[in-house]
Length: 140
Image (cartoon, rainbow, N blue to C red; front, top):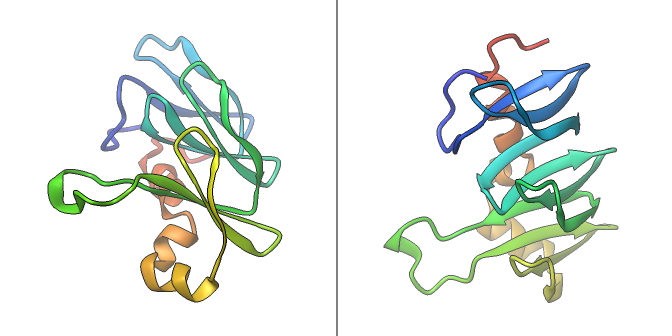
């Protein structure tokens, strides 16, 4: 990848149409096996694998299993959302739920209207993955 904000100490890379992460010396950090990838923190990396969403960490350990049809990171960046709970917002079998940062269910059966009211289409449609693709030097 070229420069992308929040890149942490790694570079996004594609090999055989699969995403992974490498360090600045080319050492593989995350293997090239994911359909899409976006680093939020070193412990929360959103990935798409076999058409399902999940969360891994920089050790490639699974935090949230790859079983969701949609996944939104809902983080409080800075002080402007002081009373907000950080969570993952997931959809499985048309049912939305909230998970804590360890992947445990906080609330199930969240109404679609509630989701649409709070989250933008960019969140729901994985703009983060699109953004990373735009950062790639060679987009093949």
